[in-house]
Amino acid sequence: MTTQPVHIAGRPVKLGLAGTGFIGGGLIGLLEFREDFALSKVLTRRNSVPGVDSEMLTSSKQELAESCDIVIECTGDVSRAAGVINAAFDAGKPVVTMGAEFQVTLGTYFAGRGFITEAEGDQPGSIAALREEAIDMGFEPLVYGNIKGFLNHYPLPDEMHHWSERNGISLAQVTSFTDGTKLQIEQALVANGLDADIAQRGLLGPKDESLDVSAANMGRTAKAMGISISDYVLNRTLPAGVFVTGEHHSSNPNVLRYLKLGEGPFYTLMRPYHLCHLEMFKTLRRVASGGNVLLNNSVKPRINVASVAKRDLKPGTIIGTAIGGFDVRGEALRFSEDPFAVPVGLLTNARITRKVDRGQTLTWSDVDLPDCAATHIGMALHEQRLAEMKMLPLAQTK
Image (cartoon, rainbow, N blue to C red; front, side, top):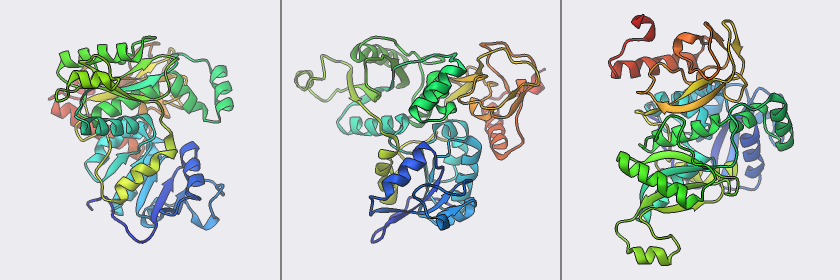
């Protein structure tokens, strides 16, 4: 069934929500004050959810999809998300996500099957929205940027437990933010969805420079490459926002200087915040009014997020949590650079089959993946890319 955006008038748009964590729970609280949107069902494994009547809870993905006009997926779990979105498409419903992890891991498979878009509010959606504004104003984007204040590729568990409790978010979330995995995933999604590239494996990530200097230097890099790039800056003094850097050939440089955009030729537009579920309604209105996709991983992605060992891993080791755990972290790279690098989003509950050293990139032959729909989809996408590159599976090259 072809899934299309919906167009609704005269009644609230019915939302089916999968996920009741930080994003989903926040969205539920906001809906109390909205007249244009209303919950139909909430998919959850819990017996109760604050702010939701018990009859609105369901454990059935199909019931969720059939109850609503738009499915919102924010479980934070790649495998669960695949099941929810598959049910939504079977029911002919569009999907709005706030799950860059799912998008980069499996989103390409679903982008070819129905309407799926990332929501404004998390960095990828906010960058995509800022890009639309920049293009409307005549800018030609060269850099799609994320602003990060702190990174530590090897955070300690005690530190992460402290920050998890202090900030009221899960241990996996705070760890993936700290070790850079979430950032690498976000910028991979931006590159894939906006037909951009990356300058190098792991991104450039200039540190402790002014935004204008860092962004202009990355603009020169993109200009030399002949394609826009997705990247980030690392600077504690900057706000937790996003930026787009580009050129503007149709406006007088003196006018742009007067408008406080600097000397050029590279101009940076910065949005000093991203407000997660508070901004999701902008994307929901977009979809409800028949608008187009804001951002998804595309059907022809360039960028993978590989798995890099954070410690020596012995055969038989089970990776309990991949994204936000203490065994591996994610690193963006082109599929063409290492076609056999296994995506970090598939490694939860995987078993290590041979010794992997700290700092080593894991391949498909280094792990046994769990037998589930997400693994099957991921393997199918992997085999499809190898076929497109006219390469044999790794097992057949030995």
